[in-house]
Length: 118
Image (tube, rainbow, N blue to C red):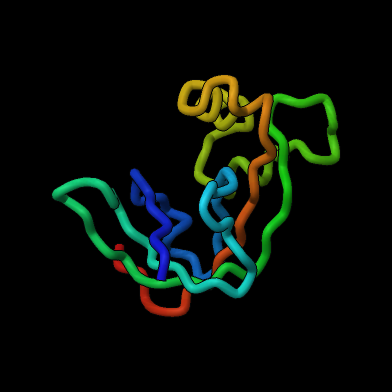
């Protein structure tokens, strides 16, 4: 089972169904039906397994593009834990740089398959 890491214990992790935005993986991309382990700080000595979830939907989004049908919405940004779409765009720009203009991002919808610790 692959790890889906989080660097912050977002409030969304308390919900039964939640979303997250992830770039495609180079080895094997995320897939609908895949079971994942939700982990807080996966590359740290403070690593904490929070639970398990199933990917129930995957949609293409594109940050830094003029194609409106693929842009994340204000509602999606807020559901993902950001205060606004502007904050989300800034986070992805600061974190991933030019990659936001070069690659699509996936909006993954997950459903808990075990209790996620708070």
